[in-house]
Image 1 (cartoon, rainbow, N blue to C red):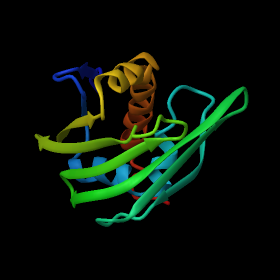
Image 2: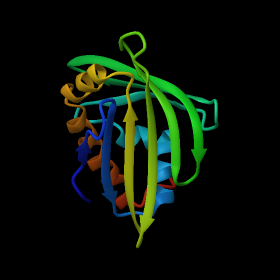
Image 3: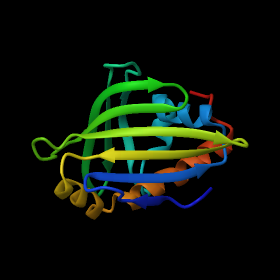
Amino acid sequence: MSPLQVTIPADREIVMTRQFDAPRQLVFDAHTKPELVKRWLLGPPGWTMPLCEIDLRVGGKYRYEWRHPEKPGFGTGGVYREIAAPGRIVQTELMDGAPAGGEALNTLVLSEQGGKTTLTQTMLLPSRELRDMVIKTGMAKGVEASFANLDELLASGAQGRN
């Protein structure tokens, strides 16, 4: 729908904003239902998500693992701290192999106007150095590729199918 905007408003923050041509409940579902997450949160072509576990409750955990036939796989997980459906999720995130103390706090906010949803994802990292490391990984390119997949999923009308 619209290009991903990435800003760095503070020493430890990364903020990503993007609009989707869908109601926020559908965008929320796409972020919280494993059968949907596995279909779009893939990054560039060639990646798959063989593991997607979501226990969507405060204190519940999630775990994602990605695989690629020619690259090393990786994973991430965390704990849900706040869930206010369909507008807000706060969760921790720790990537496999992250340095000690490398856990991020992610806040997802979905706002709807005229049937379109603006997604704002704020990552609060423990240090400026870690924030800079995350930016240098090319994370924004992978996020935008995943969001392009999400655009296709939302447009397909397959949101409710398992």
